Length: 365
Ligand code: COD
Ligand code: ZN
Image 1 (tube, rainbow, N blue to C red):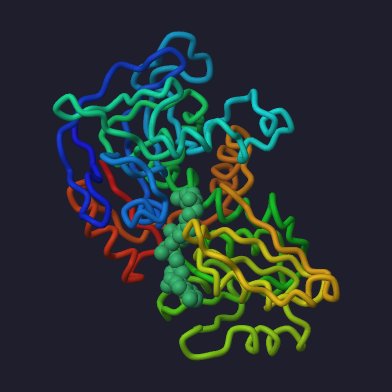
Image 2 (image 1 turned 180 degrees about the horizontal axis):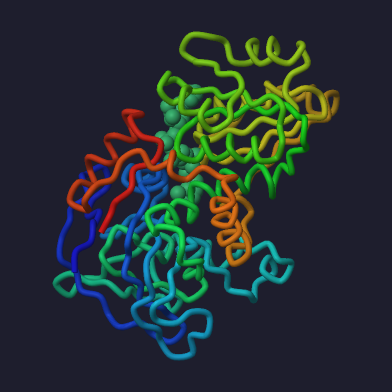
């Protein structure tokens, strides 16, 4: 079977034949139908998310259950599933308090590139091949823990269902689960990429009155309008904080989301807020990066600066619910999928993302 493998950081991904073992107890073999290309995959290539190589990238995907290992109770062959890249262990402190997004075991395993027992399921010429966050969706088949295989309704095309597995969950969840944006409020979204567009549509879903999108690319800003932005700022042309003040009666926004992963734009999100506002950081900056904010403002403006991971999801509840919202006509998925590619075109898909040509690129199998 074919998979797109990263052998060396900063190098193109190669589509090669790999071997895949049968699922072990608690694991599920999935025939991937579609996989979304996310900037986080690129973070791995650039070593900003330092994971072991060789590794099969891709963590956004959907497919059909092909086989299940011993003891699997959550799915059966033939089920349609969307993959969750945070398979909860159910046992750690954070799982016990129902914060599955913060599962300690999933975080440690994501970094290891291995499955729960510490070994890999893929190999190439006898050498271990790792998986991104226990998923690895840029492959014809993949094996994942059953907690990663979320059963879904069968009347949503799998190429659209794939999108909710990362980008939609991360973006919409940041608004609904983390910030709990209130109807009528003003929201700034810095970075209108695949995830940022979903923060924008999440804000629209939550009933925000003003949704101010910020990006460097005009094409992204017009997409942002499609997803519900009411105002746009091209950060190449205008001062972001000043423009936000202008759009909010000189008060600043009630909520700001940073969806890029850069210290400067994180500070910008904080600085866009009115007193008592909340900034939510979605983007992950490089490991040693630090953010500079004015210390005096912390007590005197009583703002909140927080973060969100995977949209603070409870995947078994939230992923199917997002698809229900799609079927109800309340969530845009078709508009997100700008272009589809064969697995062998994966590097082109990355380049299109970097060039700002797509909302989300989808690899179709
Ligand atoms: N000002 C305004 N906009 C900017 C700037 C800037 N200085 N720099 C870049 N942008 C815009 C780009 O033009 C682009 O439109 C957008 O920001 C980024 O979008 P994409 O499509 O390249 O990236 P996404 O949306 O796929 O991913 C964004 C994340 C923030 C999720 C990602 O980069 C990240 O930080 N991932 C790590 C977090 C993580 O691991 N999550 C788990 C899986 S997503
Ligand atoms: Zn992602």
